[in-house]
Amino acid sequence: MGRSSETFSKKEKEKRKQQRKKEKMMRKEERKANSEGGGLDNMMAYVDEFGNISDTPPDPTVKKKDIKAENIEIGIPKREEIEVDPVHQGRVSFFENSKGYGFIKDADDQESYFVHINNCNDQIGEGDKVSFELEKGPKGWVAVKVNLVD
Image (cartoon, rainbow, N blue to C red; front, top):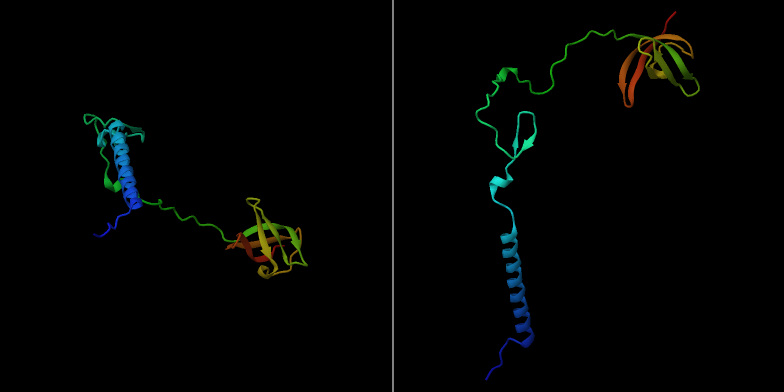
C-alpha cells in the first residue's frame, strides 16, 4: 500500500489558509453591513451659480440666464498695441571701467538697467546722461545701443 503524498504539515498549512480566507470574508461582510455608503445619491455634489458646493440639486423653477456663445472669450483678451518710443533717456548711476559693466537709471520711471561695455557706442562714466534702448537679457532688461547725450 502506497503512502499519501500529503504530509501533516501540508494539511495544517491548507487548514490555516482556508481559515484566513473565511476570516477575511467575514470582515468584508461586516464592513459592508456597517457602511453608510447609500449609493450614488450620497456621493453627488452640486455647484450653485456662485460656485458653492451643496448636496441639494439646483431648483429647476429658478430662471436661468441666457448667455450668447459669441460673448464668451476663451484665452487671453487681445491687448491694444501701444506705441512706445524705443529710445530711453537716463543717467549712468554706476560704472566699473575695469570690469566693463554698470547700471543706468531711467529718467522716466527711475528703473535701473544693466549695461555692458560691449553695448556702448561711446565711452561712458558715472553721472553721464545717455540715451539707450532695452533688450530682454538672460536675467532681465539690458540697456543696448548706449550713446552719450550732450
